[in-house]
Length: 352
Image 1 (cartoon, rainbow, N blue to C red):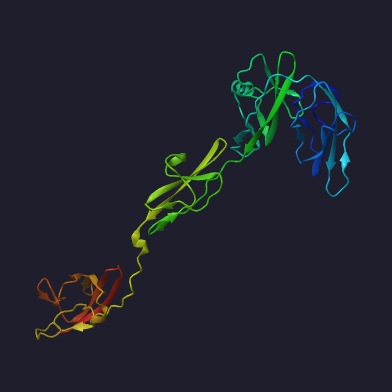
Image 2: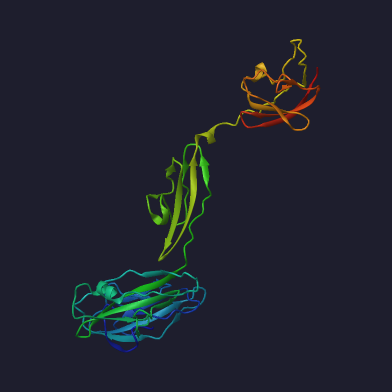
């Protein structure tokens, strides 16, 4: 047993009984009584794998207390430690208020950080508006420690016992933990495009959705529907560390439209602008069964790549002239652009 010390006197009736952890232990059993081997105060309670226990009803005043700890090895024989004893003092008439555990982000993941807890503020929380009390700090074993800023270094986790003592020397204790946490990592979601709405998916516990940077704006939750185009921020906080990511939600009804039907275009292979009134113009004419198929433009080039004509949807076609001069019989090339931005290239012949 590490605390109270063996044969200690004037021990607070509100003290916690603690012992050192044993390698390979599955758990611990505790006996506390007013006689050697007695169990009238704590009857072989199974405390699991914790190494401290505070009797909820406290301990009797001015009483010799006997404590026995048994180690449970699960798959081996139990081992009982030697009985320890201590004597309690009078019950104190003051209070010590519990405080929350402290957490700090281990920024560089080296498992050691300094907490820099303000003792004036902490002492005030422990004693409230009570007077003529002294606050001291002790390690898990009950030894007095210097807990001022500059000494509050922690490796992974540290238990601190705060002792509040009155002018008669009677004290009460509470304990709190200093725990290091690894830096958080905000969840990552890729940009999304939806036609009507996007449902926010579940994300890790340290991460939350917000409409503004660093936890500003409105907080959103998994399952909320986003119905307008916007940037969503994912902000993760753990102790005094944070991380942030963001993604864009684009709501566009066009995304829901079915793709246009694949259309095959047929173009004339030749035309004969010779003045006989037959096949005088070259142009694409939409077949009756393809009334929906339209072209935006058709550009016509000679064999040297010179643009000779640009035909629109309402044009009657190319008449074989360039700047009013008839072009010779030859092959010519065209490039057509459809309404769904499909590009069609080909060639045809001019015959006179």
